Each structure stands twice: as structure tokens, then as C-alpha cells.
Length: 360
Length: 100
Image (cartoon, rainbow over all chains, first blue to last red; front, side, top):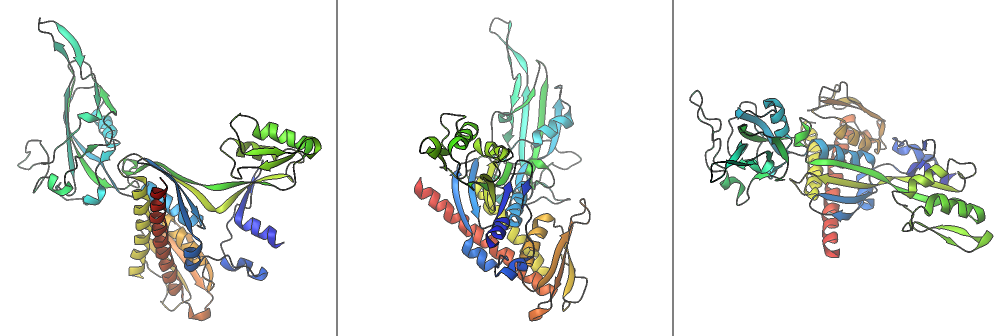
């Protein structure tokens, strides 16, 4: 009985037709009658929580959260997607655009280009605030597509047929546009180089195709980048994707022997030469399946899950998923390291709670 | 940010979290449910376009726990969880660097 309750509490069973035991038992004292206390407490969390980093590079990191409720894992995921600030192009001043792409379409396209700048160095720009060196990054672009003239006077190669993101150049002194109605488009008190130190601001990638031009067409514009969050517009989201999944566990409930072992290996294991999640021991009727890799792999977990739907197999093997053990993946778009984004998200959740606490 | 609809000594209250959504409300709900003195706790987001979440707390009244007190404990728990997660991530980063 107790064993069954614990299984229901800790695992989702992924069956062929439906998933069982997916619900979280919200009330902490639900298991008091059997002498079990699974209720959340901060002290217990501090003791049982474990985090291990499995992959980490500039753009992607994968780590495991153990002993963590989906309420927290999901809070981190939601914050990463929509509340960690970054810099993105918000205003585009078009001086000239004779390309086939309409101004507003082009401006939207520019907005999505990832901007390489540490958002911690900048402030949010409020409704009526002037653009200054601490809240705005100015990028300009002036490209003209034309045919080169050869020394003998004939026309040669077409240049600037494709305009890439490297055409956007940083203006640390602020807006380069002429004054209009007696006012500049920016109000920089000092060079932005003093704010950001020796780093060069600009686009994360140099090779994003922005627009294609025909000879004679020209684009001249200035972009103002501001700090924002993904909740307002996805261009401010620091990640491409961020997700977590429960850790799968392949469990043999009853020994799989003889002909069953052959069937299992045929259906779930021998689809590729390099697949090594299961092995067989013994020969003939004594042949028994052993699970080598209890988590299985991307290819075999689904095959096993489908097999459990076939007659007789549901009692023999099961795919279960731990409810409090997650594999968390963050894929950035290059402005910030994935670890920095995660730590920032954790800080944001704490500050949300702190904000509410201060008004209580 | 929060406006309990009843007195601070009451064992029931609905807290309105302005500018918050499922992110904080669900984490709080989870933390509140861990408290043995909380009889009932749930949250709702009344309208998806309005940035507001409401958290309902009812306590059993045992140990003199008021709804506001339970809320305060839950908020402190969330902060404590965040501290632990940050610590754990930094340790994991160091361990990862050492192994490489």
C-alpha cells in the first residue's frame, strides 16, 4: 500500500494511452494518516535540493534540478522567457528607404536582431525620458546598392546586394541625425564608451540578412535600442527556448525472459547498432533483459512506452517519470551566458517575493 | 502591492498581487500548502490581460497563525528557496569547471 502511494506521489506513469498519476497532491498533510510527511518546507528543500551541471557553453546549458517542485522550476522558466531584461532596437528613424521592404516591416525586422550589450549597465527608459548614454544605444546604417565602375568606364560587379547586420554601427556619441524643431534625437552627456568600458557594442551576429537591394536602392536609418523584458515583446527575451522535462526511468516490473526478451530487444533495443540502453543475459529460455541505462535515450523511451500498450506488456515494463527531478535546458541567443540568465532569473523571483513582503 | 481584504488578525484573506501572474502566485501557493496551519490555499488570475493575481489563504487558527502570518512565511520560504538555488548553481558551475 505504502509503496503504491509513494509511487503515485513521486512518479508519473507514462502509458501508451494516457499518463497516470500526473497530479500534484497540493495539501501537505495528505499522507499524515500513513505517517508520511511530504509537505514542502524551506528547511527540507535546503537539505534535499541538488543541482548538477551536465553541459555548459556560451550558448547552451543543461542542468538537473533534484528535489524541486514544478512550481519553482516553472517559475524560473517563465521568468527566463519573459522577465530577464535585455537590450533591443525599439525605435527606428528612417531617413531614406527605397528598398522593396516597407519601413514598418523593416523596423520590426531590425527589432528582432540580438544586440550585444550587458543590460546590467543600462537603465530602463521611462515614458517621457530623453535618450541618454545610460538608457539608449544608438546604431546607424547607411547602405547603397550600386554597380561598381571599372577603370575603363564600363559597369562591373553589383555591391551591397545583400545587407547584413554588420552594416549596423554603434554611435557612442549618440544620435547622428540633424536637429529637428531645435532638439536632437538624443541627449548624451558624455560618450557611451565611458559607461560600458572597453567593450564594443553592436549586434551579436554579423551575418543576419536584413534586406536585399537592387542597384540604385538605398537605406539610411538610425536605431535606438532600449532595455526591456520579453513580456512586452519577444525581441527582449534573452533565450530562443528554455524548457525542462521530467527524468524518465525505465523499470522492469517482472523479468522479461525467453521469447519476450527477443521481442523486446527487436522492438525497443536493436533498431540501431550503437544503441546500448539494454542488454540480454543468458541463452534460450533463460535469456533475460537487463536495463543498462535506466533513463533510456531519446529513441528508446518512446518505443518502450508504445510497447506497454500491447497485450501482456503493461505488467512487465513501465516508463515512469520523476515528478521532482528535472532536466532543465537553456538556449540563449548570444547576448548573455546561459548561467548568467539563470542566476538573474533566480534573483528576480526572490525580488518579486521581497517586493510583496515589503508591502505586507 | 498586496491588499488583504480583512484585518491583519483574521485567519482568512485574499491577497491581491498587482503586477504579478502565475509565476509568483503558483510558487506562493506551493509554499503555503506546505504550512500545516494552512487549511486552504489557492490562487486565480481574474483576467489574463490584467496584470494581477489573487491568492486566497485560510488558516486553521492553530498556533495563532493568521493568514497574513502564513503569507509572510511563504514569501520568506520563496526567498530562501531562491538563495539555495543560487548557491547550488554556483557550486555546480565550480564543480563543472574543475572536471573540465
